[in-house]
Amino acid sequence: MNRLTLVTLALLGTATLHAELFTEHFKDGVVKSQIEYKDGTRTDTAEGIKDGLEKVYYNTGQLAFTVTNKDGKREGAMDWYDREGKHLEMIHFQKGKRHGLNIIFYANGELRIEVNYINDNKEGPEKYYFSTGRLASVVTYKNGRKEGLQKEYNEDGTLNNEVMYVHGYKEGERRWYDKKGKVIQTETYKMDRPINVMKQVQAKKPDATLKALEGLDFNPNNRKAD
Image: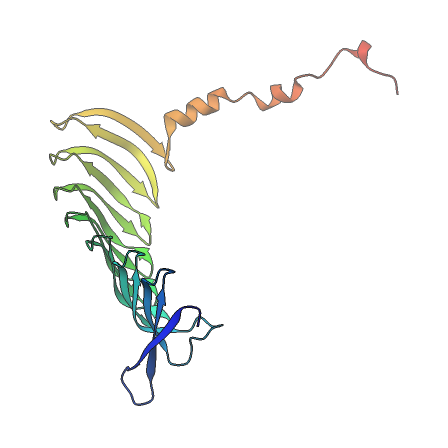
């Protein structure tokens, strides 16, 4: 069965409902994945309906991720690991879509990123952290787009810069600060674009009318008779 081995039949909850556990291997025989499918749905020509525990491995044998499926869709927590077995990320699913807290870790186990999802869209504050545990940045999402004030910090905890987001775009003045909280630089944005840069680009554009007239000969003596 193309290196797929039917390992066992597992009873899931009723006398009539079963799951088939399939194990797939790499060419050298190392286990590549172990996935439970609804009984009878996985064949040589059909992918099948995942239902139950799914484990996927690196080619060196370490577990890459594990997740539970229900009726072909991911359900609950999905845990990712690196090749050394360290926990990299936890993603929560509901009916196949990201729904719930999503957490990413540094290799040392410290929290790196945390954000909540609702129906596959980021919702609420998204926080980034330095490997020391200090907050690096924070911004709020609404329906998958940044909305509100974004703040970025230095590793010592002082504010580095801040800017407002409206419907996912930078809007208004972005301010950078020194370690004492004094504004040292500003940049004004419109629809995520720096206004000063936009002005410079527009100033370099040739006048459309003049460009259209370039190369035209207005000397009547040079015109050909019809």
